[in-house]
Image (cartoon, rainbow, N blue to C red; front, side, top):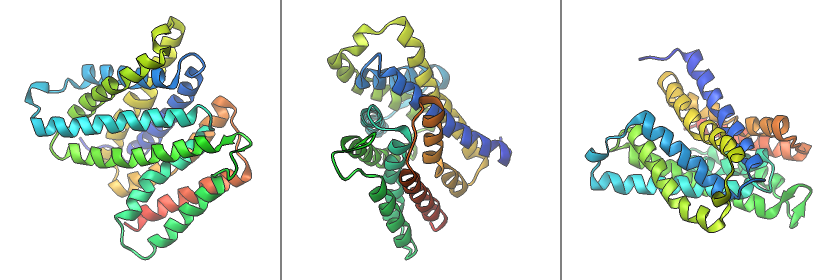
Length: 279
């Protein structure tokens, strides 16, 4: 069924808002449970919801499909865990901006147009402005920025793994089973850290909110958006996600950014939009 273009655009914006609201709730959850436990709860609850909603055809999955699903699931686990480690000490807007360089770099690597050198330079400038060149500058620790950058690399691998698995597997099957693999991969980390063993009913509710808003709801909204928007339009719309993250961080967590950090974010957003338009 064809989706109205305006509804599809609203769905794309809603997916980003949902994901970032989920991230703010995850950060609040860190006070109750460790990052490994929060990651496991996010992907674990999301996997359960997707298994119920999408009912994957497990018996029809071939060995080659399972190989790709496992790689996809491991990329989901790594990306989320490392991002949460960064988010624990670093403002949400900065985390998402630095992480965004992962898919942006991937887009630029596969592009061969001269104008893309401009977008690369702009993205590099943005990161140079946002990185604290001493061990700690204000509320932005260098380790947090490095972890966010590593999560960006994980995001790039996630994009490749997603493209790889959806070539031969139904998207809903891949999502549900891949998220289940991610849950199994993060379970040992959660048990080793120990926080999940002391999970209280009070922490279960925010964990459910994190899972729904960070994974289940945005995934569904993105499917709606992709049915009504061209891929390039969808990609350009996603370029504003760092700004949405900064706004959610400010409104919900009270995180403020300096003028220099906002300028850095703008550089990355413009570079992302530019690289998408010149594909």
